[in-house]
Image 1: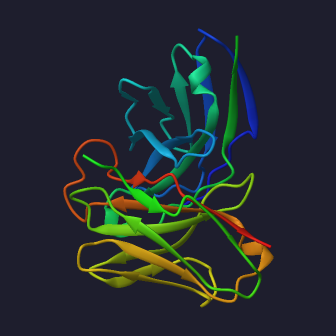
Image 2 (image 1 turned 120 degrees about the vertical axis):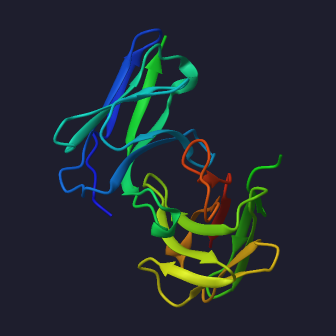
Image 3 (image 1 turned 60 degrees about the vertical axis):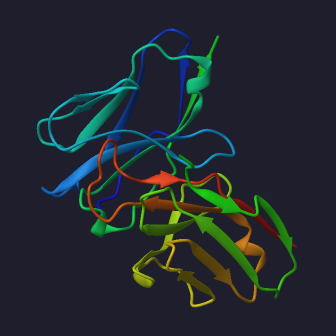
Length: 112
Length: 116
């Protein structure tokens, strides 16, 4: 699986958009970008994933650059409960691919 | 519909001892993966089980072993515990086919192992 690079920490004001960047310059053509978040003392929670098109669901939006070497997770209206560690990973879509390679993620702190 | 259940939630062991952690996958899931998460770091893949066989393995020594039962539940065993084995151990389950909504991976809340 390709490696990812994320800033170690970011702050965001409550109610504002949180934009979390991720670099994955070695991503291969059949690998998807996945985002998870981990709230303290819990397991990672799936947020969103995409291949090359921008994606949106009830939790977030995912913007993937045209060359697929980077992406941005957008939380449109951050709340205090969005404070967590956010992980960007890349892996094949088929679950037979098995393992996910997590980096150290970005600690997002949403402030009142 | 229960998610992934892990037991125990917390555990304290002494160096050199052996430990067994347990995981019950989400209903409908037949594949189980185990991860180790040291404090302040991301989860690291240990291995994955499917059809009661170890299918993939990360960079972990043979002291780490596992098992999957016919009901898809799984155990992680660690022998000759070291202080460095202190971590949160996460189990994730997924369906082999038919991911459905999301990405199919569901993590449990983990077992916090402390080796003293």
